[in-house]
Length: 369
Image: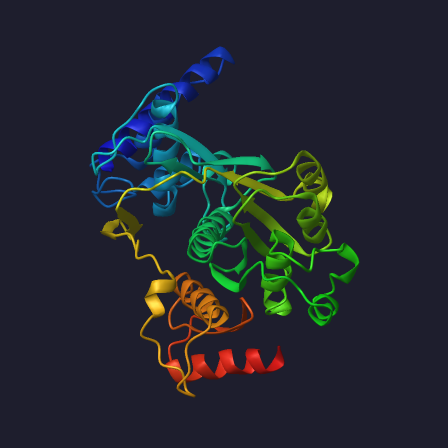
């Protein structure tokens, strides 16, 4: 890290020298020499026999002091120069074969140069997501990727379209496309959309997902398990939402969504065939943590031993509800408890330190629903 930081700093200084010389000004190296003479290296005066600190030197030169939280930005600029047009290996031996960038909004206190950019790298041969519209932020990417895993797994397990409403990296709601009856269509405020009441649809899945907890879904990130059609886009266009991720979009749906939020609505397209590596890696406080990805897949066979209270057999509808609840909990911050009914989440307790409080929260939401 230190070598990379030095290399990046030297390259930046060389470019500044070239710009200053072209404009007839002094080089940064001559400025640094002036700073050295001001502080008197090795002299007992001023710095009392020690070398001047970076803060002191840069303050005298009128330059920005280099805080530790700028290291990633400095090294990021260096790596961008090195990665553009070539392949690079990361410390785990995989290829960062594709580079992309997006604005940072995950940490409002972080100050990164070059326009507050964070970096997004793919460890596979190709970047699996493409930004079709808008400018996704750090949390948007986290919401989108986690929500996509939820809906794709839920659709695979149930054989029905699935949708999810994510907020702060946990689902506010998730559902499969169980057809809406008249009462449900009215309560979910979609009676005017003429959603087919006879067969499962993506629009009914989205209406159910966002109808689980409307307050929590305000300003959410939406995930769709299949190609977004026009009627689903019409539903999204009138909701308060930050973005959507789906495997594809109809032309009319894409045009409609691109106009949302004054043209700034985030639209992500993801490759449904993308299969990540078994290992997941996270960097925290300069340390890398690695573990196996949670690839456990739920199916209808997962509930063959479930006991029914009245001694009867478990119905297919109940199995679907169990799948919705269990898959939703899988992608929810712990502790998590979920209530599901008619193919949708109706109460989600998330991110609680106490399981009792978590159950109480989920139960209150289910009761309100």
